[in-house]
Image 1 (spheres, rainbow over the protein chains, first blue to last red):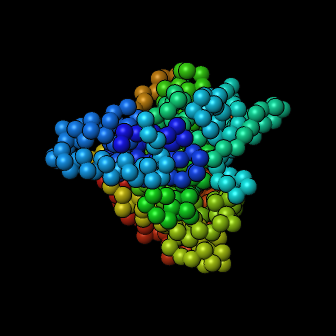
Image 2 (image 1 turned 90 degrees about the horizontal axis):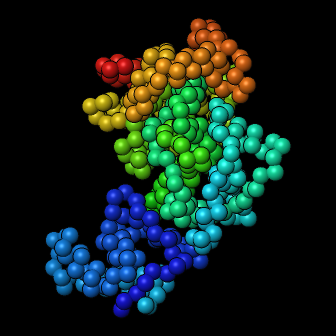
Length: 87
Length: 338
């Protein structure tokens, strides 16, 4: 399920950890919570979903299986809105 | 618009927030060589248009997010909020005397975006989106066009003060000052020369500020509308945590304005004016602050305005503005440093 951010999508931070994604094709905006923003930034840096989950467990008090599940769900959401594409 | 095309925006400034073919966005003008010397940003835009064939273009707001990643820009050093006709332009002009400064004085693109917090931010996502746009439009306006710019000061339109809490959420550490004046003098000034904000066709902003319906605003006498609006500003300023002990906010009455006080405000903004800059500020403070040519001498008019106040002005002042003003003055006097 490793994916890369679409070139038609711009992300920006807001208010600490949260952020906004804008799909330049559809002009739709998406508000991301702190975890989703960590996932998006990880994808921008070329990390795999496993690497992102590992990063989350090292920075937050969360078990690896829960972090992996969260990352999987967030990436599925990105895919459903066509914000990412397969590598 | 692809990011590689965005780099061509250097030197373009967003001069207005507009709607083109039903699409809300920004109007840009190429002004790499135009210094923002006039008392108000839109006066500078008008000068730039005169006799020059400058490129202009429209974009939607999303361009701002891309520009934030590529444009070198000056972060804000200080914000000037005010209750209208109370010396804020004098203070903004003083900021212009500081070398290598950018002063954005009531730029349409900034204040119209802030108004959208009231008219369009109907849910949390839109509120965040408009916050990001506002941050982006300031970033674009404050781009380093000469490479030497060091300080950015922003003077907002008076109605934008109603959104100070949202603005401070974007820039929580930026010091701000709220300037205000005796309500009778403020109302007399606004009624004798009615400003656009008081007769704006979109009544939603003043309705939100005064807590009545747009229909009620449309039917209200200007004196009452002005009194309710500035009374609301005083009340908001009174409610906000400020003072050096509670956050980077400062209250300043028009009757305090002097070169030493302005110098202290600049230091509050993190800037130490030189002797030469203070001399410039003193010279400019003797000129009527809003006049473009800078030739009309300033004449103190508090006494004249008090005499000009009719019974209606005194009545609406007493009903809507006197008590909030008194409370705000009480709070200001508790600030020991100014």
